[in-house]
Length: 155
Image (tube, rainbow, N blue to C red; front, top):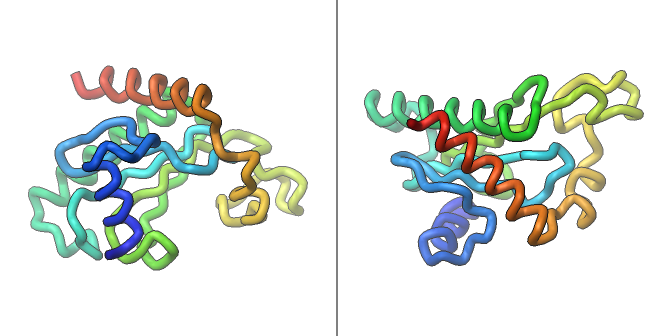
């Protein structure tokens, strides 16, 4: 079972504290590490590897919901710009899922790029440091903010 499927299995069992909301095509979850405050994932519900493997109607719905999640993240966490990644060849496994990074000026400063560039320019040992794991109160607050913004957009 891939890493995303494992995460979905935990979510369905009620064992994923990072779950924000279940949508028609996927699950909205706060990322475990929060260097980029508000980093969120949108996990497709079924094990599918490529966007083109989805039928046209399902793909359109999934992409529409992903853009709603991205807009909600932007609104909830004050992003100046959103970064989107749908890779599927890392630790999470080959399973459609989006990484949604809210970006702000200076969030990767001091790394020779004047604070601009993709998230992977930030050193991974710093991005995935234990100090970037939200405590239970921070996680509760982040989830509430994101859920509020999602619900507003889905009315």
